[in-house]
Image (cartoon, rainbow, N blue to C red; front, side, top):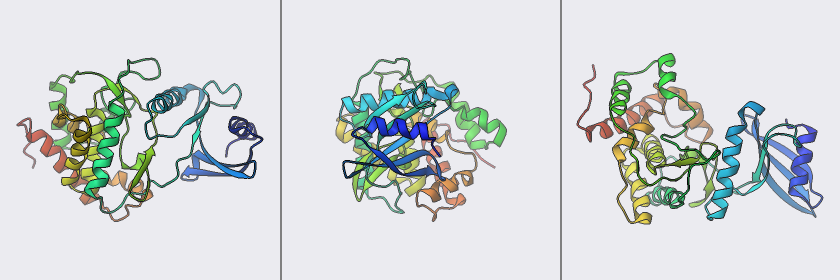
Length: 305
């Protein structure tokens, strides 16, 4: 639970004599925290994210990304305060508004929902920005995680190995750099019915190619809903931008290589977001089919035993 000093910092940031009345952990009963306060007879809900002093870079990125998102009217929480050194809060902390809605993923997603996600990504990518300390240049999603190194520990597969070799042969596409979310998937969205309220978890944001987000959204949609879902994401993005997305197969491969070798490892996350109907066989097959399709477009589909 947050310390008394940390909650005092939260109350001071909300202002108006606010007092904390409830604290709930949003992930397995732990951080980030949803804090409910009373202020002037009204209820105010905020989200508190904390970190270690040696890991405050992620919080700094989130704070910078939320600031930029607000400046451009993007669908995201609003930054209320940040104490990146922890000088006042007692530990590095970022405080933001709580979005009203939920992040549960439906068993079936309508084409309209998927196109809405593609359009939301396009709005992010419409923001031109130069790399800076807290919004660095990115060449892939979740850039601080070495997924290839992980596979050397957890094991790989012939398909994933072939995809990694193919990727290593290709130069990283370089076009106009844009604002990117860096971890865009269904679980980082908040909905009120069929209305997209906003996007969460901006700590992997930065500056890069739109494909970084398009690939993860497409890969995620294909895994959760089937292969046709990925094209609805792309269609929504292209409707807003008025142009054809660049290097789609490349970024699809990049996205697929951020998944676990055995997607059974991802089942707890799927269940947490309401997809207890999914099994490892389905998840592995859909991911592999998505990756095969991307490799096919390079004419390098592997022959598996």
